[in-house]
Structures are given as structure tokens and as C-alpha cells.
Image 1 (cartoon, rainbow, N blue to C red):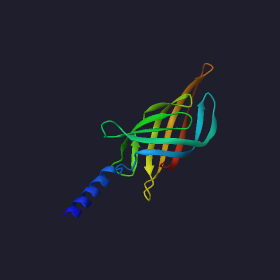
Image 2 (image 1 turned 135 degrees about the vertical axis):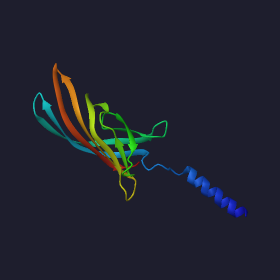
Image 3 (image 1 turned 90 degrees about the vertical axis):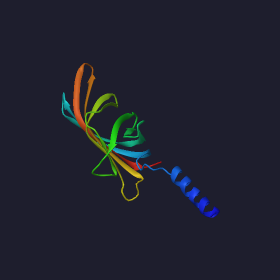
Image 4 (image 1 turned 180 degrees about the horizontal axis):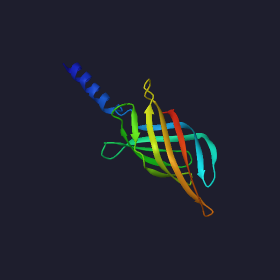
Amino acid sequence: MSAMRSLLLAGVLFCACAPNDPFVGTYNVTVSGTETETAPQNTSRNIAGMGTVAVTQNKERMGYLVTFGENYLCKLLATQSMSAPNELTIADGQSCNISGFTGTTTSAKLSMDTATMTTATLTVSYTFTYTLLFVNHAGTGTRTFTGPRL
């Protein structure tokens, strides 16, 4: 009976200590994407680099805070998708400062690799605006952050 109790206690302790949320963690990611400036002129640029994505639960444990960036940090609120349990949905219309301009999400989601649940892919589409030398600029962009949990 004592051995059974010890085994049960060990099982409870293991379950209590094991992470139970597959999204929460920090990910070392590669960043790729494109930006197209539409005003005052039409120009495009490719984006490539390294960055970080961190996922934490919000205080109420009803959603998530997704923080990401290269040489900047952007924080967006997310919820677990009801239709795809391995995805976090990020609502449109959230804003943050991305490399000196204001970006507003138009579409975003974070997906976990279903085979291992250790690799995340965050895709963020956005509009952006900024002012340089009294000239207003605007455009659109998409960035994809992919990498393993640290």
C-alpha cells in the first residue's frame, strides 16, 4: 500500500510540475516577409533576420500575450482558436511600434507544429504609417516568425 501511495504521489507531482500549456514559452525565430509602401511612392522591400517570439498567459488565464520582434518589441493579445486547437488567434486592429512606425494588424495567427508542438510560426499582416521629414508614408506588410522553443 505504501508503494502505491508513493507512486501516486510521484505521478501527481510530475503532472503538477509538467508544463500544461503547449503555447507558453520563448521561441528563437527566423523572420521573413515583405513591405510595400504605397504612399507617397510605391516601393517594396524584403525582410529577413533573426528574432524572438514569447508567449505568456494573461493574468486571467483566459488568453495570451504574444510578444515578438527583431530589434523592436510588439505585444499583441491572442486567444486559442476554437476551430484549430494548435493555433492562437490574434484580433485585427491591434497596434504597436515596429521599427519606428506604427503598425496595425490586419491578420495574425500563431500556429504550433502539430508533430512536435515545439516549433511556432507567427504570421502577422499589417498596415503601417509614419512621418519622415514632414512627409506622411503608408503601406502594408507581412512578417513570418518561425522557430523552436528555447
